[in-house]
Amino acid sequence: MSARKISAVLPEGIHTVVLGVGDINGIMRGKRIPASHWPTICKDGNALSIALFALDMTSDVWDTPYVNFDNGYPDMHMFPNGQIYPLPWEEGVAICFGRAEGMDHKPVPIDPRGALIDVLERATEKGYEINIGTELEFYLLDPETLRPRDSGIQVYSLARAAELEHVIGPIRRHLNDVGIPIEQSNPEYAPGQVEVNIRYGEALTSADRVIAFRGLIKELALANGYIATFMSKPFAELSGNGFHAHHSIMKDGKNIFSDGGKLSAIGMNYLAGMQQRMCEMALAASTTPNAYRRRQPYTFCPINNSWDYDNRTVGIRVIEGSDHATRVEIRDGSADCNPYYLLACQIAAGLDGIDQGLEPPPPINGNGYETEDADPLPADLGTAVELAKNSDFMKGVFGQDRLDILIGQAERELGFMADQVTAVELERYLTNF
Image (tube, rainbow, N blue to C red; front, side, top):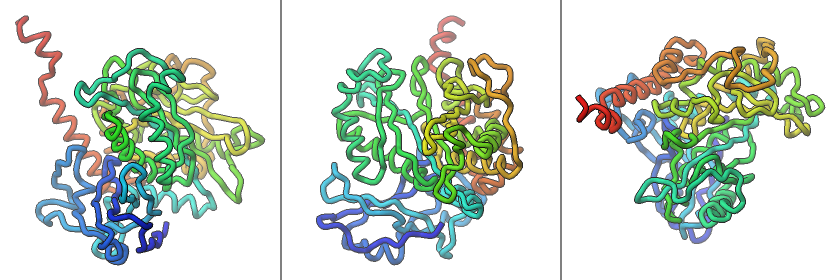
Protein backbone atom coordinates (compact mmCIF):
# COMPACT_ATOMS: atom_id res chain seq x y z
CA MET A 1 0.00 0.00 0.00
CA SER A 2 1.95 3.02 -1.22
CA ALA A 3 1.61 6.48 0.32
CA ARG A 4 -0.39 9.02 -1.62
CA LYS A 5 1.21 12.20 -2.90
CA ILE A 6 -0.60 15.17 -1.41
CA SER A 7 -0.64 18.63 -2.93
CA ALA A 8 0.91 21.37 -0.82
CA VAL A 9 -1.60 23.79 -2.36
CA LEU A 10 -4.67 24.13 -0.16
CA PRO A 11 -8.19 25.00 -1.33
CA GLU A 12 -8.90 28.70 -1.41
CA GLY A 13 -9.87 30.19 1.95
CA ILE A 14 -8.34 27.42 4.10
CA HIS A 15 -6.29 28.75 7.01
CA THR A 16 -6.01 25.56 9.11
CA VAL A 17 -5.67 21.85 8.35
CA VAL A 18 -6.65 19.11 10.80
CA LEU A 19 -4.21 16.22 10.32
CA GLY A 20 -4.67 13.00 12.29
CA VAL A 21 -4.21 9.24 12.53
CA GLY A 22 -5.99 6.50 14.47
CA ASP A 23 -4.55 5.40 17.83
CA ILE A 24 -4.70 2.00 19.56
CA ASN A 25 -8.43 2.45 20.19
CA GLY A 26 -9.25 3.92 16.80
CA ILE A 27 -9.51 7.45 18.19
CA MET A 28 -8.30 10.06 15.70
CA ARG A 29 -5.46 12.08 17.21
CA GLY A 30 -3.16 14.63 15.62
CA LYS A 31 -2.61 18.36 15.25
CA ARG A 32 -4.07 21.51 13.75
CA ILE A 33 -1.67 23.08 11.29
CA PRO A 34 -1.74 26.65 9.90
CA ALA A 35 -1.88 26.92 6.13
CA SER A 36 1.45 28.75 6.10
CA HIS A 37 3.16 25.62 7.45
CA TRP A 38 1.35 23.09 5.26
CA PRO A 39 4.00 22.87 2.48
CA THR A 40 6.60 21.95 5.11
CA ILE A 41 4.32 19.27 6.55
CA CYS A 42 3.80 17.77 3.08
CA LYS A 43 7.56 17.58 2.58
CA ASP A 44 8.92 16.71 6.01
CA GLY A 45 5.96 15.47 8.02
CA ASN A 46 4.89 16.56 11.49
CA ALA A 47 6.69 15.24 14.56
CA LEU A 48 4.74 13.80 17.46
CA SER A 49 5.42 11.09 20.03
CA ILE A 50 5.10 7.41 19.22
CA ALA A 51 3.24 7.30 22.55
CA LEU A 52 0.15 8.06 20.45
CA PHE A 53 0.10 4.32 19.65
CA ALA A 54 0.63 3.28 23.28
CA LEU A 55 -1.88 5.26 25.31
CA ASP A 56 -5.34 4.37 26.48
CA MET A 57 -8.67 6.09 25.85
CA THR A 58 -7.96 8.50 28.74
CA SER A 59 -4.50 9.35 27.27
CA ASP A 60 -2.69 7.52 30.08
CA VAL A 61 0.60 5.92 29.01
CA TRP A 62 2.50 2.94 30.33
CA ASP A 63 5.84 1.34 29.55
CA THR A 64 5.85 -1.07 26.62
CA PRO A 65 8.84 -2.84 25.06
CA TYR A 66 8.75 -0.57 22.00
CA VAL A 67 8.10 2.81 23.62
CA ASN A 68 8.79 3.58 27.27
CA PHE A 69 10.40 5.91 29.80
CA ASP A 70 13.82 4.34 29.21
CA ASN A 71 13.84 5.39 25.53
CA GLY A 72 12.06 8.66 26.30
CA TYR A 73 8.90 8.11 24.24
CA PRO A 74 10.60 9.26 21.03
CA ASP A 75 9.11 10.94 17.97
CA MET A 76 7.63 9.67 14.76
CA HIS A 77 6.38 11.70 11.81
CA MET A 78 2.82 12.11 10.58
CA PHE A 79 2.41 12.76 6.85
CA PRO A 80 -0.73 13.71 4.88
CA ASN A 81 -2.12 10.63 3.15
CA GLY A 82 -5.56 11.54 1.86
CA GLN A 83 -7.59 14.12 0.05
CA ILE A 84 -8.01 17.50 1.74
CA TYR A 85 -11.65 18.32 2.52
CA PRO A 86 -12.94 21.68 3.81
CA LEU A 87 -15.10 21.18 6.90
CA PRO A 88 -18.55 22.62 6.05
CA TRP A 89 -19.27 23.42 9.71
CA GLU A 90 -15.96 25.16 10.48
CA GLU A 91 -15.13 28.00 8.10
CA GLY A 92 -11.55 28.06 6.87
CA VAL A 93 -10.70 24.65 8.33
CA ALA A 94 -9.98 21.48 6.32
CA ILE A 95 -9.31 17.89 7.32
CA CYS A 96 -6.77 15.44 5.92
CA PHE A 97 -6.19 11.85 7.01
CA GLY A 98 -2.58 10.99 7.78
CA ARG A 99 -0.14 8.13 7.97
CA ALA A 100 2.67 7.46 10.44
CA GLU A 101 6.32 7.01 9.57
CA GLY A 102 9.27 6.37 11.88
CA MET A 103 12.27 8.67 12.04
CA ASP A 104 14.01 6.02 9.93
CA HIS A 105 11.33 6.56 7.21
CA LYS A 106 9.97 3.07 7.82
CA PRO A 107 6.49 2.06 9.04
CA VAL A 108 5.99 2.35 12.79
CA PRO A 109 5.82 -1.26 14.08
CA ILE A 110 3.08 -0.48 16.61
CA ASP A 111 0.83 1.52 14.25
CA PRO A 112 -2.52 -0.37 14.19
CA ARG A 113 -3.06 0.65 10.57
CA GLY A 114 0.00 -1.39 9.62
CA ALA A 115 -1.65 -4.63 10.72
CA LEU A 116 -4.44 -4.14 8.18
CA ILE A 117 -1.98 -3.05 5.48
CA ASP A 118 -0.03 -6.29 5.94
CA VAL A 119 -3.14 -8.45 5.65
CA LEU A 120 -4.32 -6.59 2.55
CA GLU A 121 -0.97 -7.10 0.86
CA ARG A 122 -1.59 -10.81 1.22
CA ALA A 123 -4.97 -10.34 -0.50
CA THR A 124 -3.44 -8.25 -3.27
CA GLU A 125 -0.99 -11.06 -4.06
CA LYS A 126 -4.02 -13.21 -4.86
CA GLY A 127 -5.53 -10.54 -7.10
CA TYR A 128 -8.23 -9.77 -4.53
CA GLU A 129 -9.65 -6.42 -3.54
CA ILE A 130 -11.40 -6.74 -0.21
CA ASN A 131 -14.49 -4.53 0.03
CA ILE A 132 -15.99 -3.63 3.39
CA GLY A 133 -19.22 -1.84 4.22
CA THR A 134 -19.65 -0.66 7.80
CA GLU A 135 -22.61 -0.01 10.10
CA LEU A 136 -22.00 1.75 13.41
CA GLU A 137 -24.40 2.59 16.21
CA PHE A 138 -24.05 5.46 18.67
CA TYR A 139 -26.05 7.44 21.22
CA LEU A 140 -26.89 11.14 21.16
CA LEU A 141 -27.05 12.39 24.74
CA ASP A 142 -27.87 15.55 26.61
CA PRO A 143 -24.55 17.17 27.65
CA GLU A 144 -25.77 17.88 31.19
CA THR A 145 -27.60 14.65 32.09
CA LEU A 146 -25.62 12.32 29.79
CA ARG A 147 -28.90 10.57 29.08
CA PRO A 148 -31.07 10.44 25.93
CA ARG A 149 -33.44 13.36 25.55
CA ASP A 150 -36.16 11.20 23.99
CA SER A 151 -37.83 8.12 25.41
CA GLY A 152 -39.14 4.82 24.15
CA ILE A 153 -37.85 2.48 21.47
CA GLN A 154 -38.76 3.82 18.04
CA VAL A 155 -36.50 1.80 15.74
CA TYR A 156 -36.91 2.83 12.07
CA SER A 157 -39.54 5.39 13.10
CA LEU A 158 -39.68 8.18 10.54
CA ALA A 159 -41.33 10.41 13.14
CA ARG A 160 -38.36 9.88 15.50
CA ALA A 161 -36.00 10.37 12.56
CA ALA A 162 -37.64 13.73 11.86
CA GLU A 163 -37.22 14.71 15.52
CA LEU A 164 -33.49 14.02 15.22
CA GLU A 165 -33.05 15.46 11.73
CA HIS A 166 -31.62 18.74 13.05
CA VAL A 167 -28.52 16.80 14.08
CA ILE A 168 -28.59 13.64 11.91
CA GLY A 169 -29.28 15.62 8.71
CA PRO A 170 -26.03 17.62 9.01
CA ILE A 171 -24.18 14.42 9.90
CA ARG A 172 -25.31 12.70 6.68
CA ARG A 173 -24.71 15.73 4.45
CA HIS A 174 -21.42 16.92 5.93
CA LEU A 175 -19.82 13.48 6.15
CA ASN A 176 -20.56 12.98 2.47
CA ASP A 177 -18.92 16.35 1.83
CA VAL A 178 -15.70 15.20 3.53
CA GLY A 179 -15.36 11.94 1.61
CA ILE A 180 -17.28 9.55 3.86
CA PRO A 181 -20.12 8.22 1.66
CA ILE A 182 -23.20 7.77 3.82
CA GLU A 183 -25.92 5.43 2.54
CA GLN A 184 -28.58 5.97 5.19
CA SER A 185 -29.39 6.62 8.83
CA ASN A 186 -32.16 5.47 11.16
CA PRO A 187 -33.21 5.54 14.81
CA GLU A 188 -32.05 2.33 16.47
CA TYR A 189 -33.32 0.04 19.21
CA ALA A 190 -33.14 2.51 22.12
CA PRO A 191 -33.98 6.15 22.88
CA GLY A 192 -31.24 8.42 21.59
CA GLN A 193 -29.60 5.63 19.60
CA VAL A 194 -28.84 6.03 15.90
CA GLU A 195 -27.29 3.85 13.23
CA VAL A 196 -25.45 5.31 10.25
CA ASN A 197 -24.26 3.14 7.35
CA ILE A 198 -21.10 3.93 5.37
CA ARG A 199 -21.04 2.70 1.78
CA TYR A 200 -18.68 -0.16 1.06
CA GLY A 201 -15.19 0.54 -0.22
CA GLU A 202 -11.69 -0.88 -0.30
CA ALA A 203 -10.92 -2.24 3.17
CA LEU A 204 -8.15 0.17 4.23
CA THR A 205 -10.17 3.14 3.01
CA SER A 206 -13.19 1.82 4.89
CA ALA A 207 -11.20 1.53 8.12
CA ASP A 208 -9.79 5.05 7.69
CA ARG A 209 -13.33 6.31 7.17
CA VAL A 210 -14.50 4.73 10.43
CA ILE A 211 -11.70 6.50 12.33
CA ALA A 212 -12.66 9.87 10.85
CA PHE A 213 -16.41 9.13 11.05
CA ARG A 214 -16.40 8.64 14.82
CA GLY A 215 -14.38 11.76 15.50
CA LEU A 216 -16.39 13.95 13.15
CA ILE A 217 -19.73 12.71 14.48
CA LYS A 218 -18.64 13.75 17.97
CA GLU A 219 -17.79 17.22 16.59
CA LEU A 220 -21.08 17.56 14.71
CA ALA A 221 -23.10 16.33 17.67
CA LEU A 222 -21.42 18.87 19.95
CA ALA A 223 -22.07 21.64 17.43
CA ASN A 224 -25.78 20.74 17.60
CA GLY A 225 -26.03 20.49 21.38
CA TYR A 226 -25.44 16.77 21.96
CA ILE A 227 -22.74 14.43 23.23
CA ALA A 228 -22.22 11.47 20.89
CA THR A 229 -20.84 8.24 22.32
CA PHE A 230 -19.77 5.00 20.66
CA MET A 231 -19.24 3.35 24.06
CA SER A 232 -20.31 -0.28 23.74
CA LYS A 233 -22.88 -0.43 26.53
CA PRO A 234 -23.47 2.97 28.14
CA PHE A 235 -26.78 1.96 29.76
CA ALA A 236 -27.39 -1.44 31.33
CA GLU A 237 -31.09 -1.43 30.48
CA LEU A 238 -30.71 -0.26 26.87
CA SER A 239 -29.29 -1.61 23.62
CA GLY A 240 -25.53 -1.63 23.11
CA ASN A 241 -23.62 -0.04 20.24
CA GLY A 242 -22.46 -2.45 17.55
CA PHE A 243 -20.07 -2.37 14.59
CA HIS A 244 -21.20 -4.65 11.76
CA ALA A 245 -18.79 -5.30 8.88
CA HIS A 246 -20.00 -6.46 5.45
CA HIS A 247 -17.34 -8.36 3.46
CA SER A 248 -17.02 -9.12 -0.24
CA ILE A 249 -14.10 -9.70 -2.60
CA MET A 250 -13.61 -8.25 -6.05
CA LYS A 251 -11.39 -10.00 -8.60
CA ASP A 252 -11.12 -9.01 -12.27
CA GLY A 253 -14.00 -6.61 -11.77
CA LYS A 254 -16.40 -9.20 -10.35
CA ASN A 255 -17.70 -9.95 -6.88
CA ILE A 256 -16.42 -13.49 -6.41
CA PHE A 257 -18.66 -14.01 -3.37
CA SER A 258 -21.60 -14.15 -5.78
CA ASP A 259 -22.63 -17.17 -7.79
CA GLY A 260 -25.71 -15.94 -9.57
CA GLY A 261 -26.71 -13.94 -6.51
CA LYS A 262 -26.06 -16.85 -4.12
CA LEU A 263 -23.01 -17.07 -1.87
CA SER A 264 -20.28 -18.80 -3.87
CA ALA A 265 -18.04 -21.64 -2.77
CA ILE A 266 -15.19 -19.21 -2.17
CA GLY A 267 -17.54 -17.05 -0.12
CA MET A 268 -18.36 -20.11 1.99
CA ASN A 269 -14.64 -20.76 2.50
CA TYR A 270 -14.16 -17.17 3.66
CA LEU A 271 -17.15 -17.44 6.02
CA ALA A 272 -15.80 -20.68 7.47
CA GLY A 273 -12.44 -19.07 8.15
CA MET A 274 -14.03 -16.19 10.04
CA GLN A 275 -16.27 -18.57 11.96
CA GLN A 276 -13.31 -20.74 12.98
CA ARG A 277 -11.42 -17.76 14.48
CA MET A 278 -14.36 -15.69 15.74
CA CYS A 279 -13.98 -16.68 19.41
CA GLU A 280 -10.20 -16.59 19.34
CA MET A 281 -10.07 -13.05 17.96
CA ALA A 282 -12.72 -11.62 20.30
CA LEU A 283 -10.25 -9.12 21.78
CA ALA A 284 -10.08 -7.32 18.42
CA ALA A 285 -13.88 -6.94 18.40
CA SER A 286 -14.39 -5.95 22.04
CA THR A 287 -11.51 -4.35 23.92
CA THR A 288 -12.98 -3.15 27.25
CA PRO A 289 -14.81 -4.84 30.15
CA ASN A 290 -17.85 -2.76 29.26
CA ALA A 291 -17.95 -4.14 25.70
CA TYR A 292 -18.78 -7.62 27.00
CA ARG A 293 -21.93 -6.30 28.67
CA ARG A 294 -23.36 -6.15 25.12
CA ARG A 295 -23.06 -9.89 24.74
CA GLN A 296 -26.50 -10.89 26.03
CA PRO A 297 -29.22 -13.07 24.49
CA TYR A 298 -32.05 -11.42 22.60
CA THR A 299 -30.25 -8.09 22.22
CA PHE A 300 -29.32 -8.48 18.52
CA CYS A 301 -25.70 -8.85 19.65
CA PRO A 302 -24.34 -12.34 18.90
CA ILE A 303 -23.33 -14.64 21.74
CA ASN A 304 -21.84 -17.40 19.56
CA ASN A 305 -20.26 -18.00 16.15
CA SER A 306 -23.38 -19.42 14.49
CA TRP A 307 -24.22 -18.44 10.91
CA ASP A 308 -27.35 -18.33 8.78
CA TYR A 309 -28.97 -16.58 5.86
CA ASP A 310 -30.52 -13.17 6.61
CA ASN A 311 -30.76 -13.88 10.34
CA ARG A 312 -29.97 -11.17 12.92
CA THR A 313 -29.66 -13.58 15.85
CA VAL A 314 -26.41 -15.15 14.58
CA GLY A 315 -22.76 -14.11 14.61
CA ILE A 316 -22.31 -14.28 10.82
CA ARG A 317 -25.15 -13.35 8.48
CA VAL A 318 -25.16 -14.12 4.75
CA ILE A 319 -26.95 -11.60 2.54
CA GLU A 320 -27.76 -12.68 -0.99
CA GLY A 321 -29.42 -10.93 -3.94
CA SER A 322 -27.84 -9.24 -6.93
CA ASP A 323 -24.23 -10.01 -7.86
CA HIS A 324 -22.90 -6.76 -6.42
CA ALA A 325 -24.92 -7.07 -3.18
CA THR A 326 -24.02 -10.64 -2.17
CA ARG A 327 -21.87 -10.47 0.94
CA VAL A 328 -21.04 -11.83 4.40
CA GLU A 329 -21.80 -9.73 7.48
CA ILE A 330 -19.97 -10.40 10.76
CA ARG A 331 -21.85 -8.86 13.66
CA ASP A 332 -19.81 -9.18 16.87
CA GLY A 333 -17.82 -5.91 16.76
CA SER A 334 -18.40 -3.19 19.35
CA ALA A 335 -18.74 0.36 18.03
CA ASP A 336 -15.73 1.54 20.06
CA CYS A 337 -13.22 -1.07 18.83
CA ASN A 338 -10.28 -0.34 16.53
CA PRO A 339 -11.40 -0.86 12.90
CA TYR A 340 -7.87 -1.69 11.73
CA TYR A 341 -7.55 -4.56 14.19
CA LEU A 342 -11.13 -5.73 13.72
CA LEU A 343 -10.93 -5.88 9.93
CA ALA A 344 -7.35 -7.23 9.88
CA CYS A 345 -8.40 -10.22 11.99
CA GLN A 346 -11.62 -10.84 10.09
CA ILE A 347 -9.94 -10.64 6.67
CA ALA A 348 -6.95 -12.75 7.70
CA ALA A 349 -9.29 -15.42 9.04
CA GLY A 350 -11.36 -15.30 5.84
CA LEU A 351 -8.27 -15.63 3.65
CA ASP A 352 -7.13 -18.61 5.74
CA GLY A 353 -10.51 -20.16 5.07
CA ILE A 354 -10.00 -19.76 1.33
CA ASP A 355 -6.42 -21.07 1.43
CA GLN A 356 -7.42 -24.11 3.47
CA GLY A 357 -10.67 -24.78 1.61
CA LEU A 358 -12.65 -24.69 4.85
CA GLU A 359 -16.36 -25.52 4.80
CA PRO A 360 -18.77 -24.20 7.42
CA PRO A 361 -21.29 -26.47 9.13
CA PRO A 362 -24.89 -26.16 7.93
CA PRO A 363 -26.67 -22.89 8.74
CA ILE A 364 -28.64 -23.03 11.97
CA ASN A 365 -31.99 -22.17 10.33
CA GLY A 366 -33.43 -20.76 13.52
CA ASN A 367 -32.77 -18.82 16.71
CA GLY A 368 -29.06 -18.20 17.13
CA TYR A 369 -29.47 -17.57 20.83
CA GLU A 370 -30.89 -21.06 21.42
CA THR A 371 -28.66 -23.15 19.16
CA GLU A 372 -26.28 -25.70 20.65
CA ASP A 373 -24.45 -26.09 17.34
CA ALA A 374 -22.08 -23.15 17.76
CA ASP A 375 -19.17 -22.09 19.93
CA PRO A 376 -19.95 -19.43 22.57
CA LEU A 377 -18.10 -16.14 22.20
CA PRO A 378 -16.13 -14.97 25.25
CA ALA A 379 -18.51 -13.37 27.75
CA ASP A 380 -15.84 -11.34 29.55
CA LEU A 381 -12.63 -9.50 28.74
CA GLY A 382 -10.44 -11.79 30.83
CA THR A 383 -11.38 -14.82 28.73
CA ALA A 384 -10.74 -12.88 25.51
CA VAL A 385 -7.31 -11.81 26.80
CA GLU A 386 -6.31 -15.39 27.60
CA LEU A 387 -7.41 -16.54 24.15
CA ALA A 388 -5.37 -13.75 22.54
CA LYS A 389 -2.30 -14.53 24.61
CA ASN A 390 -2.33 -18.13 23.40
CA SER A 391 -3.21 -17.36 19.78
CA ASP A 392 -0.57 -17.78 17.10
CA PHE A 393 -3.18 -16.42 14.70
CA MET A 394 -3.53 -13.14 16.63
CA LYS A 395 0.23 -12.84 16.98
CA GLY A 396 0.60 -13.32 13.23
CA VAL A 397 -1.98 -10.67 12.37
CA PHE A 398 -0.95 -8.06 14.95
CA GLY A 399 2.76 -8.67 15.39
CA GLN A 400 4.00 -9.24 18.93
CA ASP A 401 4.48 -5.57 19.86
CA ARG A 402 0.98 -4.51 18.79
CA LEU A 403 -0.63 -7.51 20.47
CA ASP A 404 1.30 -6.89 23.71
CA ILE A 405 0.09 -3.28 23.81
CA LEU A 406 -3.57 -4.23 23.25
CA ILE A 407 -3.35 -7.01 25.85
CA GLY A 408 -1.56 -4.65 28.24
CA GLN A 409 -4.33 -2.09 27.91
CA ALA A 410 -7.00 -4.75 28.47
CA GLU A 411 -5.26 -6.03 31.60
CA ARG A 412 -4.96 -2.49 32.95
CA GLU A 413 -8.69 -1.96 32.36
CA LEU A 414 -9.49 -5.21 34.17
CA GLY A 415 -7.33 -4.12 37.10
CA PHE A 416 -8.94 -0.70 37.21
CA MET A 417 -12.44 -2.18 37.28
CA ALA A 418 -11.46 -4.71 39.95
CA ASP A 419 -10.28 -1.89 42.21
CA GLN A 420 -13.62 -0.05 42.19
CA VAL A 421 -16.39 -0.15 44.77
CA THR A 422 -19.53 0.39 42.73
CA ALA A 423 -22.65 2.36 43.58
CA VAL A 424 -24.65 -0.88 43.49
CA GLU A 425 -22.39 -2.43 46.14
CA LEU A 426 -22.78 0.60 48.40
CA GLU A 427 -26.55 0.58 47.95
CA ARG A 428 -26.88 -3.10 48.81
CA TYR A 429 -24.27 -3.56 51.51
CA LEU A 430 -23.28 -0.30 53.27
CA THR A 431 -26.23 0.02 55.64
CA ASN A 432 -27.32 -3.63 55.69
CA PHE A 433 -24.21 -5.13 57.26
